[in-house]
Amino acid sequence: MGSGLRAGLPRPIRVRRLTADGRLRVVYAGRLVQATPEVLVVEALWERPSLDLGYVLLEPQDRFVEYFFPGRWFVIYEIHHHRDDRLKGWYCDIVYPPRVTEGEIEIRDLALDVFVTPTGEVRVLDEEEFEALQLPERDPSAYAAARSALRDLLRMVERRDPPFGILPWAAA
Image 1: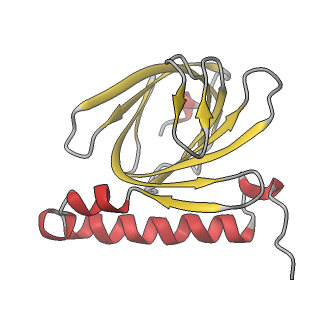
Image 2: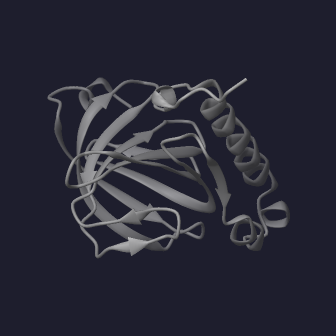
């Protein structure tokens, strides 16, 4: 990531989400609001119809603060309610490390996800979908990296590392 990416913030950026096998899933526009060698932060609005995931309802105009970590195998989406900006939670994707160019961030989703509620409840999601990718046979290093990323992400939540710093601490 060159220093040009940090110049002139905030600024428009496009995010491309691909499936694990490289098929385009969705493209959307956001605003790059922070760019360091460690993290790119994008703000974007949910522009799709309402989607009830069972543990969170995504609604048109919900605000997403998205954390992309160059070289890391996960992305964190902080979701805020469109009416009052109340935190709905964090949706975290295990992905191949993001590919970053001057005007675009591209990620390839590995199906394994985590949802963290505003009270700190953690749900690991889509294990079966992840295992169906057959990465141990097809790409063992990606499988190991994805599992390691899941452990790293869960440790970040446990330690209340950013962006999870606002989580309440569990009772002793």
